[in-house]
Length: 467
Image 1 (cartoon, rainbow, N blue to C red):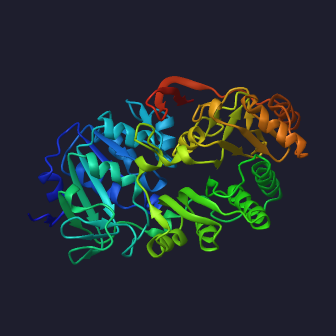
Image 2 (image 1 turned 180 degrees about the vertical axis):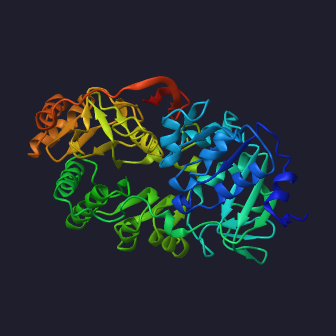
Image 3 (image 1 turned 180 degrees about the horizontal axis):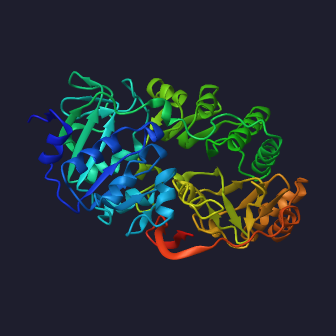
């Protein structure tokens, strides 16, 4: 069977693509990805219409989607995260059909159950052989883990591998194997790996951020969970990394070794692994090039699929074995609901990703955020958009106090006894408003531009157009 074809056009035609079908993409090259635009430009050139784009994430680099929406080439988007011009345009009512926002665990659940059928999966592969065995660790566009591409490869009707590094058969090592792949296309470049860098990936030096980080680490220290064999996930933002830095100091002082670090992996987590502070890393996506280097070289740095990571209907997902997660917020309300979908003006600028998955699965979900951002309080009566329900959140850590969800009375008592500045969340909100005043409510229109789907498939909120 010959799988290597001469062009993307040929591969699309061989797949039998038709108007109204669903095409999918992974986001492991993040804002350095060339493949989504390359494929959608070719689909437009071939005259297809009413295509659903099921991309695990949409980044600023994917701005050309706006024109494809205007031209009727793309009429639906299904994603876990959206930032940049596409999110802004969707927020202003660009598309007739609402975007469906899923979670990193909800997407593989939907694909595997048939709720999100994929007609053709286009998989950017940093390295491939002529038969479609691929990995993400070799080649000029190496991005590390290919975790979010696994469900697409396993369940799409047709799978097209797009690579800029064709090697002799058989490729070694193999992440996704030849039994799932229909066609292989070689292109000049699938992306710029420098674009995979997420967040600041540097420890903050901002005094407010450092205060939040220190408090977060102290919450973990006194939570009763900082023991040998604990598991941990944190984001790539500066305050989250700083919290991990303080946590590292506590671990060394107490002689504690963690079992695994989870999720999107940064170079800082790689340091913890290499220093023997964690035994293994379970990596669904690499957040920087240090992580890419590590996953190739270190057998204790393991690639996992999105379903392994967070699918609530799988036979076991890693978030359910997670002890502690540190997460961010654009807004949090007095019921501990968290928003990471929209900014303070209601513009789409993110999405759950693994936020709500890890909050649901972990024993301790910490939200770290400054009490005030851009002269607006982060703590509000009701978030504009519910990303993560408050009943899965344990504690909010700000520079001006720590609020514990009443559902976790034992934690509140432990933190109070430890002398940490524990404050009722309503009092913390008053502190914020004393500094900023009460902000005017955001005016939204009547058009629903997105549905927010929880990890189990329930719609938990809608996003309306901004005026």
